[in-house]
Image (cartoon, rainbow, N blue to C red; front, side, top):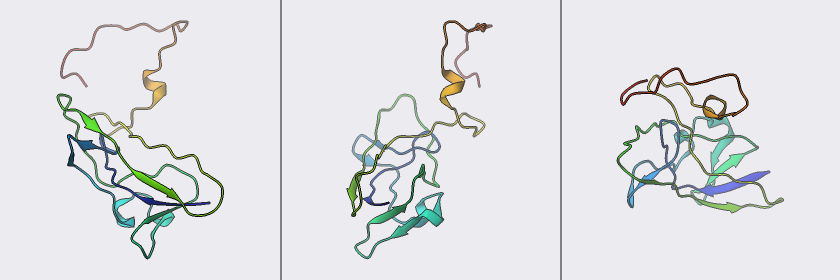
Length: 124
């Protein structure tokens, strides 16, 4: 299955996609902008062709300013085949460039864990 995408999306929180108050921060416009180069091509009309299933991320990172608001946006169209599931989002990383996954922040009230002490501003 192929998805032809004209993406105006960028990378937010070090491997995510984003725009800030109508000012474009990062734009993905060519195959070289993707980390998954073997699965990405460019169509004759300039659209980006994403091949197969997977998470497609930008090679460019963005350091997020917590005081600012960000908006994600993208344009997608289908080129033949059945309608795919398309999700637009971001991948957060910590200060040491380690991915923050849901399992690291998921709270289970029936677990045997507890917070040792509250985090302070600037802690990593």
